[in-house]
Amino acid sequence: MVVSREELLAGRRIAVLATEDGDGSAYLTAVWFGVEGRRVSTCLRRPRAARPATRASVRAGRSSSTRAGPTCTASRRAGGSRSSRGERALACNDSIHRRYVTDAGMAVAGLGGLLSEGDDVTLRLVPERWQSWDMEPVFGARLSDPRLVYPLDP
Image 1: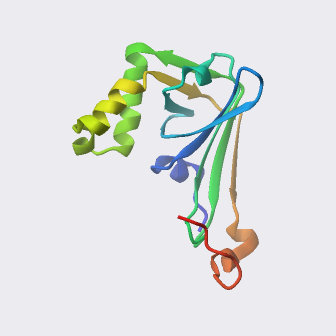
Image 2 (image 1 turned 90 degrees about the vertical axis):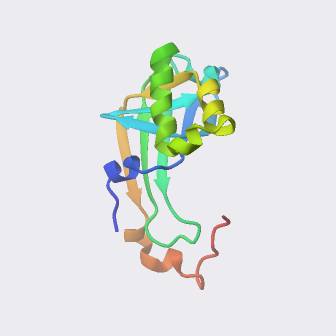
Image 3 (image 1 turned 60 degrees about the vertical axis):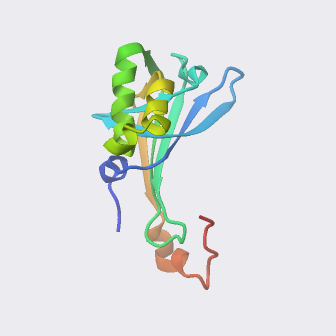
């Protein structure tokens, strides 16, 4: 079953954000994200990843620990990123948090309270290019056959 990019990004998944560190090396971090139109936004606690000229990529994928079903990934490479702080960032970050955490969870000081206090920077990426792929057309069900492939660790 092929999953469209829109379906993939509409789900609650953990994405990997790659930004360029000060020395030119890649800085990778797992993030929650939100999608609005063509933009992907993520909350940051590490402002160094939000330098305005930063080249950035975000990768959100779907797979299972047993490899059953397709492995689909949509990646987005952006020529630059925009960061925001203050009220605009807090509002965007709150919507991202609420995408992953229930109202009951947001009311818990040790969860929602910590999220509200820590994430004060939003990084927004606008795509240069999208890439999507699905390994099932190439490998079929062979990747989910335990006689052929070891299961992935949970």
